[in-house]
Image 1 (tube, helix red, strand yellow):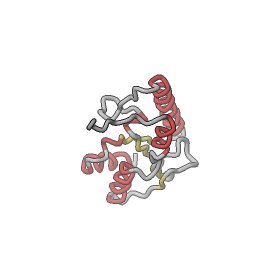
Image 2: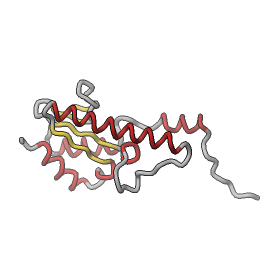
Image 3: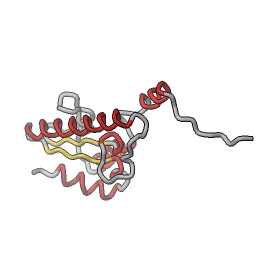
Image 4: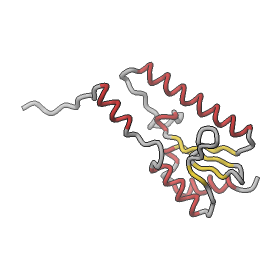
Length: 141
């Protein structure tokens, strides 16, 4: 009897898989929200009126937080930042466009006098380190 082999998903199957990737309410976002609540920091989630719809924002205190997935937003030197081998050029172009969009949105927010913080998915598992970092961001500045 032949051992079962993994079959690569077809393009339709790949599309279905990618469609299920969450955009909001990820575990990384929930970890950040828990730390913000623990610090007693008020925030709104997914603020669509601001450039880039930041994951967390406080418009009164003028800060925003983006929680980026290491894969999609290309966290440098992170093991989660892999590149698919199939349709490689498509993925490289897509990742490049994501990075350019991220930089453009952060620039717009800074021009609006917001402090901008990017928290990477891999950085959300160390709660104590995350707490120290978030506490610095929201200090009156």
